[in-house]
Amino acid sequence: MPTNDERAERGRMILDFYAAKFGDPYDATANLTDVLADLMHTAFREHDLGLKFHERLNAAMMHFEEETVEEG
Image (cartoon, rainbow, N blue to C red; front, side, top):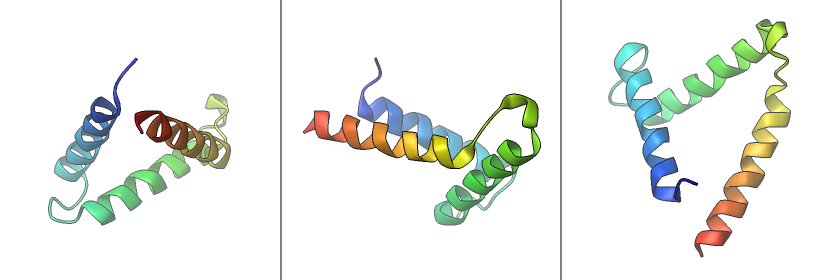
C-alpha cells in the first residue's frame, strides 16, 4: 500500500506531465482545474467506461480523509 507521500508524488507527476504537455508550467492551480475538467469530459463522453465523475470524486474525498486521518 502506498504512503501518503507516495500518493502526493504521483499526483505531482500527473500535474507536471499535464503542465508540460497541455497546461501552464507556472500555474499549478489552473492545471489542477484543467485536469479535473478534462476527466469530467472523459467521464461524460466515454459512456462505455461507465464512469460517474461526481460519485468517484466523492469516493476519492472519502479515501483522502481516511488516509490523512490514519497518518495522524
